[in-house]
Length: 68
Length: 559
Image (cartoon, rainbow over all chains, first blue to last red):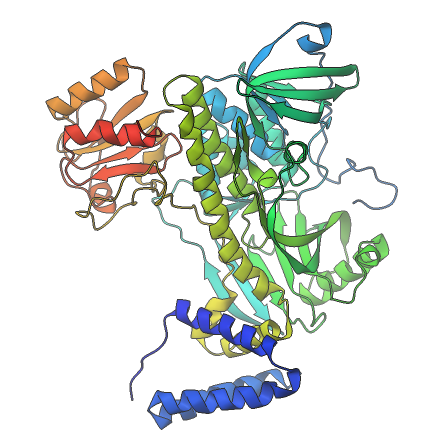
């Protein structure tokens, strides 16, 4: 399992690009877009364990903020 | 704005001075030709006057007010700005009164998710940031200007129109004792966001206005919480509002909060609304009691707006008259002070006949470049602090949620505080010498270095150019000494500052442990040419005396 990560400046570019793309879509297609994106990224990661770890990371975050 | 029953200058902690009108010679029909007039006696205008005075140039500063700014407004002064103030000999009261800080905290929902530390080390004389209300900033600068015979402050003098021709600039000035016409060689427009000078020439700011509206409110509150920048996102008490909190001297706290998209700004700035919202923040978000007093508040919008060119003939625009930036990152005042320093020394050199008028052409690319850099960073900060759309809001919340447990996402919450701009692409800056692997590159400001107890490298700069020369024992190569002597004889104002590794000559600075050599990537014979505003114009790993004069000529606007 490799630990390659994106430099922060590139992560910021991705952030901005995602924000702009989300704004260009009708709100009701947000979820479908994000789910597709997750699969497309998973396909490129090349290591299912890392994909699972990322899924867990995101799920954990949602659980953290939905208790209040 | 202030609570009902209190005048604009009725403060809980600050005694507003009253500046009388003094009848100028022009009103009695005497013709006076001024070298430089400055419109606006705010922090930027007075800093420019002090910078000109540092180089021996007289100026007259006009302001329509009879006192300092009505509220605390800009409160964060960066290290780079303090270094400017040190060069003006006015840093002491700022450091004595201001509250220094290095740290910030970001909270998301009910948790602290990120702490940032601004770069700081024992090599620095000044902390990365101090907090000080704008009234004090103005007062200290005005006090200093009052000590100078080269600065004339004209209060209660409103500039109503401006025109220029090839030989000079003419101002129409309105005063309590009548109107007069003021003539000058050059004009610095430091008259703020609603610049009269800008309007007189029909010049427009271009850029963007952001959606959000914000309230800044000052309260008097006794609290033991240290001086740090706190940002609250999605607090349980006010989930839709981003809140910023800063401590100021005299137990004054700045609370900055965003209004919702549907809130009526007029309603939101009514005293009752301010009291209700601020009370909630103090109690629920900061966890303090109800024992606080309301001092002052104001409403603002975030803009990234700038003039296309900061030079307009014989007029240079400095500070908010040239550019408006969002507050996140504290760049408004700090960039204004850098504008004043940049414009000030260049104008002084031109007026003294030491540089051609085209030196002033470099003001706009250097300082407008800094503004555009600010726009990039401040735009990101603003979109994070107050997302302008559904997509940005979702991404912001996603980044903050991930940041609860993942360090990689916490960088998004970094406030990107102001850093000095590097004039690398400036026409005044020489290409870098490839031999260097450390030290400030050409265009960057000098970095400070501790030489001993209370003794730092920047303390030793003169008011002109400085050749920072790295030597073995403080002795300078004979050919170089000769060239320096020739330039000094032409009154070019270049000081030699020799750094010695061992047994220094009388005037050299001793680098006891070699750490200054290392920080500057220097060896014996290396040199940095430093401008009056501390930015590096050129550097050489091994200076050939023949290369020195061309670099000076370039730094003065070229042949």
